[in-house]
Figure 1 (spheres, rainbow, N blue to C red):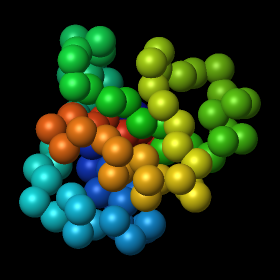
Figure 2: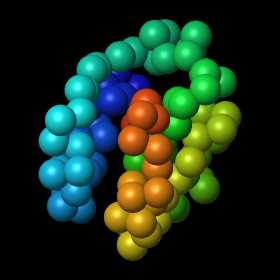
Figure 3: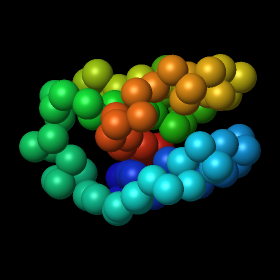
Figure 4: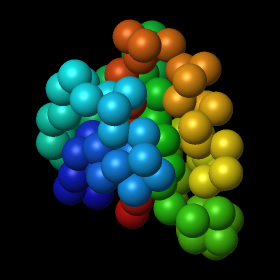
Length: 90
């Protein structure tokens, strides 16, 4: 889980949502840097793995969300603009 936040840019670009986050600031952080932020107001942790990978995995960040590809556009539109997203895939 080396790159967390940068994955958000790549994930959103893949689904064509980059204009919505064009002005957003992206930062790479480690899992050690994320740990103290867990439970912070305004932090949304997004699990970018496939649904099958998430279900099969024994490792999940408590409180993380998984968004189906077909609903990500709606989810992004309904997410507060000042929310801090941490995206992980491992």
